[in-house]
Figure 1 (cartoon, rainbow over the protein chains, first blue to last red):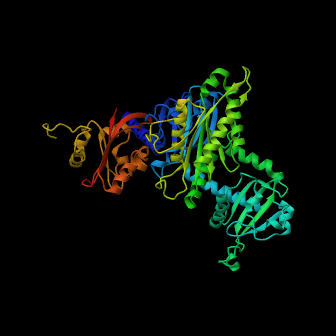
Figure 2: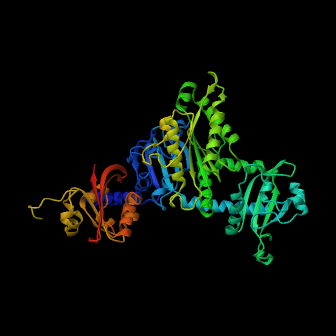
Figure 3: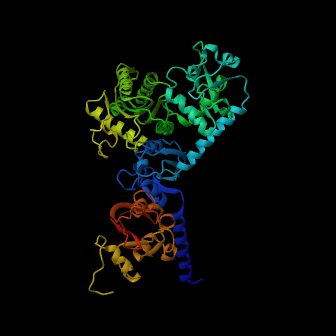
Length: 457
Length: 130
């Protein structure tokens, strides 16, 4: 073959190969172990550019710093010479305010090629995660039906969630007698596990989906608790009971004691939704809970509070006592959070020493009180370490989505709420730490103000 | 091309009109990359600088939808949505932003100038290396 022909053929092949990479519908990045980008394809730029804090794509870890701060560490700590550092890690983005269509969840796979190079695969999995979530609910429902039912209580409830009549099965499973008639079905929930709004939310969700399923601790008449799967379904021909009678049965509530299956289902749940260090909800669980609460508040307005907690000067703890001691402080803080907040609140670790608590049906005063109680509790605690006991403090920022419809001008989102709580937290840090502050509209709304509150220590 | 008129610069005023009126040779003589596309985002103009930088010959690019088949890296709120918003509102777009393109899979810092107006059939992404 003449030389020009084979050069021309190489050129054509090279161009085809370049275009193949340009058009790959997944993001591909090759980088050094410290994240320095060597090669990167267009979809990566499409997904990463809106996240990159300095608008450059020089370093993969720097570009993702704001949404996944642990990557550098995870990569550095990966013990093997080569292999999968992690696969399909879900990264929840906060930048949804720019566009309804903007990606909200990225999937990131990191492969260590050798001691010098890593390869990353980045995908927008927002739609896929939504579908999976629905599928998971269907699975849970099928599971609830198909699992061998040893015993269950069948309870009729009306449109307001009140128990309409009593039968033997209610006594067998819960121990409640006939006096339970007329009480809201939250009578089966332990204190702090149900709000009046959630009581109605579940009825509405079962109207919309055909059923509403949840699993958790329930209460017997003697105050003992059991692990329960509860299914609410609209009665098929409830119109026959009379539409105008508010006391007519409208839903069936089925309570099953599944205490023996608790270990297995908890383990499954923890793997996907818990932060591995503290056992609190992880980012994924937090954002799913937030989405649900915003949907509910959009339908039936009620206040929703967010408190962001940040351990004060935590870097000093790590530097002085070492990371294992720092981890023990975080675990201690998690325990204090669990003790302070209700079951219905979502207590999550968002990353590093930053924690968030979402409080449904909670106004500002109540949220400030709870945050203050937590702050005061932490200030009395000591954590053991090899170098003596560690005293630590936390600061908190509170932001509340008010109940009045239209009060937020329709632009309320979890991102707004987080941003406000973040600004309040920044204020608390500025007041000398170990302190709780609440957001108000006089705080600087400047986008850049507290870029990351933890920068303030 | 007349030697009397110098080539227009990246930040020249009224550039969209000049580009509309330019021949392919004139586009190829420019010192910055030019991608022109129509209301359906189909690429109609593509110059030599851009072709050389991207490693793609014009045949592979002309007639293709810009944001999905030519430059998916621009398909986000920083670039594609600016054009969509301008089209929705019927407003003029002339923004210059710092961006990173992935030319031949290398991250390259560039300035992008985004041009759209009701008076021109073509919209433009202009690319200048920083």
